[in-house]
Length: 187
Image (cartoon, rainbow, N blue to C red):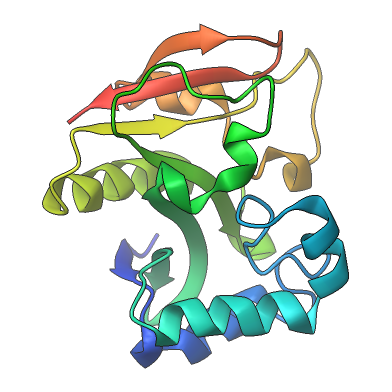
């Protein structure tokens, strides 16, 4: 299996992000705006509006995440940024802040269908942590799913699974829902 290489999403590789996310914007016109917008704005902008918003962020110089490549083709994505970039987290009773420590949040993953279930998640998590460390981040926080017994559709695991974060050294710091821990990695 070819190695996975990750690069920050910038204006230079925007087209590759579009290729990975495809016509549907990864999932239902999201374009990785779910955590960035109020539900009303997300629904109003769903599809092209969310895509334009993401494109504006990237072309303004913000790096909203990392693109993963195999043999030069975009195959995976993870979204991470300062927690303040994702206001929906603070509006959630389950995912609200644990404390006042400054953290970056690793909120979302997308892997192209042909590359799912090939063990990319640990690499995406490790590379996200390395990138955050390079940015001077001291705490990386994540909000994975603790799946109930039985298979859960890949589509609903966009925040990652708790077991993958545990293997990457993340520790649970809060749990306000049986299926949604808040996990942290001290960098």
